[in-house]
Length: 43
Image 1 (cartoon, rainbow, N blue to C red):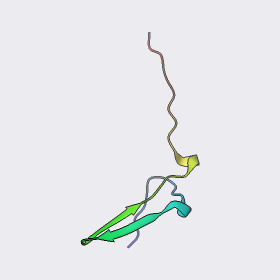
Image 2: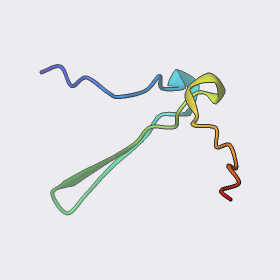
Image 3: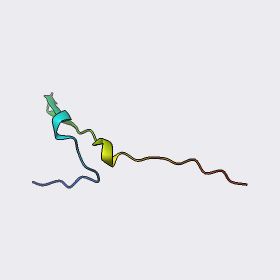
Image 4: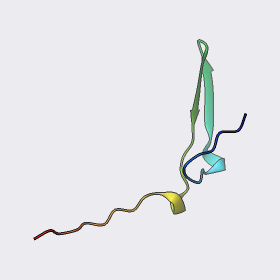
């Protein structure tokens, strides 16, 4: 199975755990793919 992600993932910081039948996967974005916000003054 292949799951496409909406952003680049830092492969060095992937964490996964399995507990009581639940698989938890934590994927951190790379610094380059993080959203930057810009403040816009209106008026």
